Length: 306
Ligand SMILES: C[S@@+](CC[C@H](N)C(=O)[O-])C[C@H]1O[C@@H](n2cnc3c(N)ncnc32)[C@H](O)[C@@H]1O
Image (cartoon, rainbow, N blue to C red; front, side, top):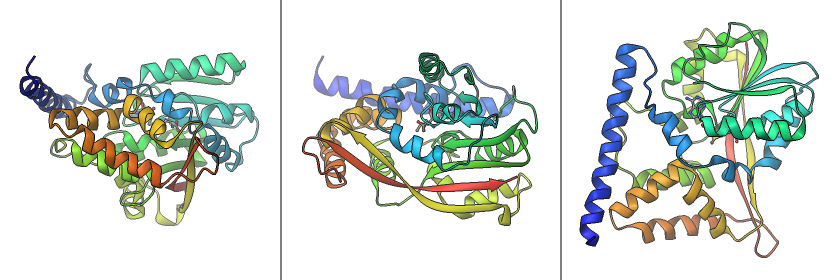
């Protein structure tokens, strides 16, 4: 196949994906129902986030250790992936339900919990924008680390998180911060600059990393500003190989980066994107062990006292 023909084919595939995304979102909103081809679900099922999550386990465990979890606490881990925080919550004795839009990650979490014999850790599919299966006032603690921030309709997400938390309970979110100089904000920014413009009305996930937005979204769910507190925390991505190998994990398995590489390929800019990201991963590597990678990334931790 001639190179410019295959490039055109890729370009039209990318354009078609965005048209489908826009149309299905509009349809879902009009019909107030879930469409079968949910683009948000497709994005996260496309890659294999477990490969990225393996580089985040130690930070997940450290975060959970700070949450004051006690045996029997009813915890919802929303946008749980394959259980990076859900499993440590269950190890501390909490009664954990992990909910995620991606069927492959729900299956992976279930396998991981079974392998550890954690009978107090279940996983099921669900959408943070409408947690239809979950009753009001069910959980003592709702945790969402880089999870619910990726769901569409952030005001609905805030409302749903508050609805399923019991009065006196807590919500803890971890959200990447727009414009932050560390890894993930920069990765999302660079990836976005190679991708076609998002559909009209699209709200960037990193808007959850701005305190005013968080206050406004929870405000509409009946939470006052004095019930919300913020801190800046760090997650460290660890990989026993050089930084470019960690980049390869993101390129091959992380939906947003996979999409950027597909769009860059359509534009003949793959090498440029690869170089920009390789510079980013290499310059942010703090590991003192040769051939190993540790990249810290700052996030906004949000705590809501319901
Ligand atoms: C960056 S991953 C983080 C996963 C996990 N919390 C962790 O710390 O490893 C984002 C997760 O959010 C999930 N997600 C995206 N949109 C969602 C939605 N609308 N409802 C529930 N989960 C969603 C994805 O499937 C993915 O597992």
